[in-house]
Length: 303
Image (cartoon, rainbow, N blue to C red; front, side, top):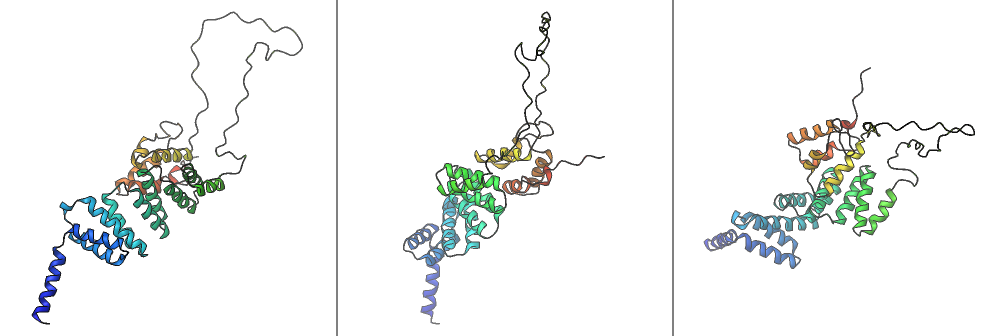
């Protein structure tokens, strides 16, 4: 190789390395507009290699998201998931990218992590109908029809017509109550003539009034904790935009306070233990608060 040719190569390499993150990113955006996807991917890669802290974290996240979308378009799902993850590490409220990563994860068979992404998508945008619908599809694939129906119903309310039909399809048969209640006792007689002996003597005169006694302690029906109520309470809390940990923290333990929406203490403790092991909030939530969770089964009493 001649000295002149070597000099040209060195100059080209120096020129490429001297370009800034901004110039590479601008070039990538232009190539993307020109439909030259492979060149755009290379330019985004050069931009990310040239990135410095002074370029800003938001710009870096945007480049990762853009490159991830091009890789997804090319069918490189695993690489796209990595780029989306890098993007979301900074851009934590990007509902669309959470949704995209969730779809890729679901397509790869990682349904629990896909559900986590759909949760994050609707947390960032509570009116994201497609994220609700896709989370409903994910729940249904796991056999969790109650959750699937609620998500499709929410998507339907937000205008996604396909989910209206799906919510109807997943609804229980008519006449079958989701949570049958015990029959109420018949009402006690309320009038003076009610309860009198039939056909006979006049009723005995009323006893003279006595001093009022303190009202008896309330002995109404005692709430029988149901794990399904615990799950629905946590679901509603998460749907309101709160993170998983605060929702779990706010749930009372049924052993201490038997009210609707309480959760078994064993499940609350299992969730905290998972967090201490380094499991993410969303993954710990999915692992512990599943419809057939072992922590929800009361221990057998010793005979």
